[in-house]
Length: 322
Image 1 (spheres, rainbow, N blue to C red):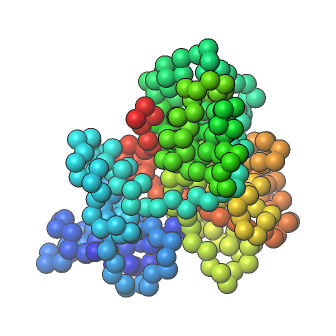
Image 2 (image 1 turned 120 degrees about the vertical axis):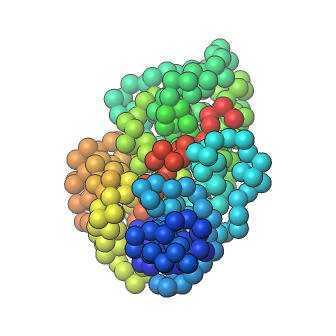
């Protein structure tokens, strides 16, 4: 059980009640041991409220919890022989549902910053399974984009240190795009087929981690009473104070399903952005922030990666070859 103490970006500062762990300095009652926690939540919770939660992992004497959409760990974790770090990631993605709902497919994922491709392959003449194995072994950080002429599909995977940190899949006959696990499954089915074309290129690690927040992070809740600019500025400020890594999306359409600009954030500081229609990486992030403020209408979404996801307590990302 988690007792809610205060709000913070993406969720709440809380304490785990009756965890059986040694008392912390601030909660030194040996009869009621507590431990500090971060509880992501897209639902509004009341200060002082106690809610059920699932333990993910520890980092810097603070637990990462997930709001208990499902109680306890899932069957694949209970029967797992993997490491604690691998299981922590499995618990996170199993118990924290993705909010990824976008109309855009692979143009959401930016091209190579240098403009140069690492490799370009046709599955008809290349051993694509060997390529994926090489990327995993090399701890590759970047992107794999796939175009299938048979399925009429376009898809992309973000890789961080050889693991999948995000994926998106779109197909001509589908009414929606698919994200993360579903996207990975469909994408891997397309790769070995005839007339499938792959692009593989490196991206800066900070950009990949920031973009991965859209797929594996948690959303920062909106206050419906605030204007777009109020939410934009207060969210940037709160993320700066908490030092989070994440990504903001800006869309000129009110529904927010077709982002036009991405703002990348590392440890609380915006460091670059991406103009999707122009397929352009922008290092001067202040110009993008000014552009959003000038337009002042549309929709802004924010996602963060809790620090525990990027710590040694967790193996971040899906195994590429599974």
